Length: 113
Length: 114
Image 1: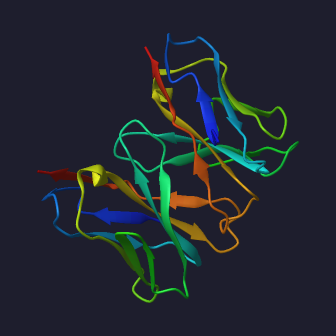
Image 2: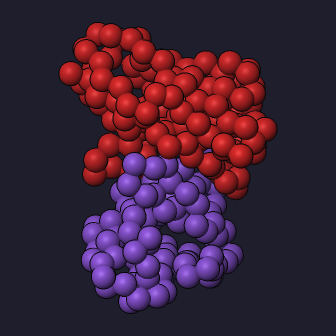
């Protein structure tokens, strides 16, 4: 069964600190991997999308990395802000899978003063 | 630019009642999707419409029907609501079908079935 697993489930950090969120997937054959940010009570918003040939992609203070050989991705957040408090969701899609996206359950990040 | 809008934001139904969730997008996208999000689970696809005039089942279609009213609007209907359908429902759209296109999500509808 194609799965996407994220760790940790939740994380609390102090404002200004960096953090890294992990995503392991078993989806095969792999097409692309996305990271979404979901604020409480809102819909997910895309941060990055990477194909299997891309190793890293940045969006401001967010940097995603991908190792297609080990089927692992990480999302690194630099100099965290209170507004970074949200759920971060890893999403993987299949090659030739049409509209099939497999969503992880997310990492709940809280940034505190 | 509103993007993807959904109505209502909240709804409480009794078991057996019916209702329709509305979704509209103003990005001239061809493809639209309905997902549900439950605690401890990733979003799951209920139905999608690759283009105006077509609809297809997703991962969890039982108990739901959809209508692609026109290019802008895609509705989700619960004919006889059940407590298992208590969830947060998200509509999304993309320029074209296929996994390489970005999906843009609406704000969600929180549905409780008692």
